[in-house]
Length: 303
Image 1 (cartoon, rainbow, N blue to C red):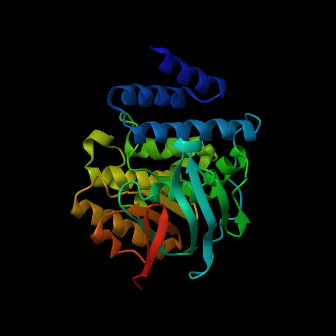
Image 2: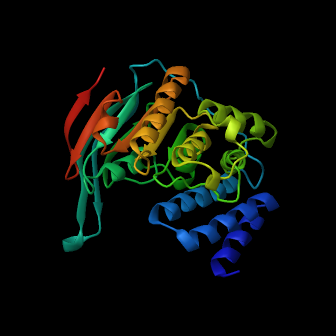
């Protein structure tokens, strides 16, 4: 066991996590250190930070997911950005990633941010999901300003009301589909007694309940992405944010994922914000914002 494995195991045990959770973290770290990508590390970092914040916020006790999850009427704004600017670095080495971004995300719709690599769409997505703070500007989620929130407050917001889907599926390789989703609920702090029902319900929503005992290596790319979506929606968020969820899939699997998204919006009223550069996917969403050089240059509505 190297230092990375020992650190994660120690952290898990310190937080009074079960042996199951500790083992899962070590397995995931071992897998990523052999085959990791930037997105894998980003996903694991998010899970670790969420677990730690959940523990600290609740004094080490099991957290109960609370908060207003009432879905609003379609057409209202769930998310607004005003004057967003994001600069990385300082002085002559600074990079202006976003500049004067203004946008409104409609409740109960699928909205896509499109643009070439380096256009700023992922940076904007990170700010909208409270994973990053803008240099200037404000973001309002359900009429609450989330810019300026503490790290603990942002973590609590994501655990209760926002689901995240990453480019990399981020599934623990030695866990079944069901165990991956249930593990996500544990990290989010959901009451253990209701985890089985919530995990199975989420898998059923994405059409994966019959395959829930299979490990990731036994699933197709589209099936793995659907499991990742199930993990993101198991705690019943009102907003789902997905960073190029179809980028690693062929066109058929990509359409399958989009059908899952459309069904979620129709049945639950969930709002979905995603990034993409696929022209075919853009025709399947409700609204498209195009970014170029860190600015929104166009907006299209497909309804």
